[in-house]
Length: 218
Length: 203
Ligand SMILES: [Zn+2]
Ligand SMILES: [Zn+2]
Image 1 (cartoon, chains in turn cyan, brown):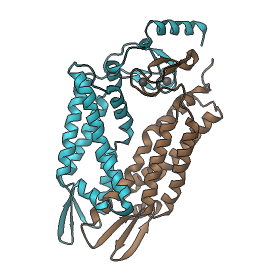
Image 2: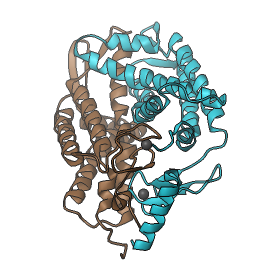
Image 3: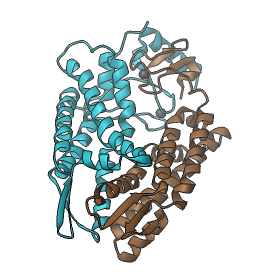
Image 4: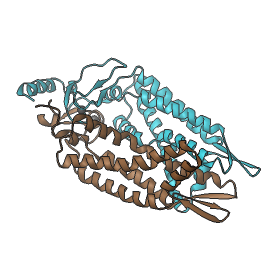
C-alpha cells in the first residue's frame, strides 16, 4: 500500500463514501463500479462475491416468496407420508409428525424440526416480501426495512428445507424393511417448495436492496 | 492492497459500506459496526469447545432405539453406518457417513485450524484460507440430516404398534453439537483470517 493509494481512496471517500466498498470478508477497499446484471464482481484479494446483480430481483423474489409461502401452508394440510404395515394403512401430515414427537425431552427434537423446517423459512419469506414488495412498487422502504432485511439474511443458514428433504429420503430407505411407505401429496408439494425456495434465494440481490434502503451519509 | 482499517474507517461486516471510524451502526443495513468483531476468538473457541464436547456423547450414546416387540436394540451413529453397509444400502450408508461423521469432525478440526492460524498469525496461502472458510460457512448445516431422519422415524413408526422407534439421547447431543458449531462458525470474524500477510503475496 502506498500513500498514493491512500490519497486516492481518501479523495473518493470525501466525495462520496458509497463509491467505495470494503470487502465484508477481508476488509480490502475497492471502488464500487457498476456491475451488469448476471455478472459477478469479486474481491481481488479473497474472491468473496462483492456484487452479483440479478435481473428483475425485486419482482422475482417477491413472486417466488409468495409462491413458497402458499406451498408451505398448503403442504401442512395434506398427508406427508403414508404407511402400510401388517394390513393397516395410516397417513401423517408434517404437523402430526411434529406433535407426535412433542413429549418429554423429545420436545427438543420437535422444536428443532418445527423451527428449522417450517417456522424460520416462512419467517424469512414474509420478511423478504415485507421489504421488497414496496420497493418493487416504487414506494419508499417500509418502516424498519434495514433491520428486517438484515434479520432475513441472518436467518438464511438456519432455514433448512432442502436438508429436510434429503433426511426424508434417507428415513424412507431406512424404513423399507419395516413397513411400506408411500409419498403423500404434501411430500410432492414439499419437493416443489424446496425448488422454489432455492430459486428464491438465488433471486435475492442483496446489493440492489441495500442500495434502495441505504440512508445518506450523516 | 489497502484495507478500511488502514484508513481509519470501518467496513460493514454484512454489506461492505465504508464508514468513518466513529459510526456505530451501518447506514445501509443497520448492522452494528466493528472494525473487527470484539472477542471473536474467545467466543468462537467457547462455542467450538462446547460443540466438540457434545459430539462425544453424540457418538457414544444410541442415536435411535428400536423397541422391537419389547426387545431394545439401540445403535450409535457408527453402528448405524456399519449396518447399512452390511445390508447393502450403500446410498444411505454414504450419506450418513458424510453428514454425520465426516462433516462434524472435519468442521471442528477446520474451525480449530482457522482459529490457530489467527492466533499465531500463520501465513497460509490465500487459496487455503478461502477454501477453509467456505467449507465452514456452507457445509456444516448439512449435518442436520441425521437429526431429521431420527425425528421422522420416531414420528412415523408410532402408527404401527409392532415396532416403535424412539430417539436416543445421542440424537439430541448430536443436534446440539451441530447447532453449537454453526454458531461458532458465525462468530469467526473472517477479516482476522486475512489480517496476517499471505505467503503468496509480496508487499
Ligand atoms: Zn475480500
Ligand atoms: Zn452494512
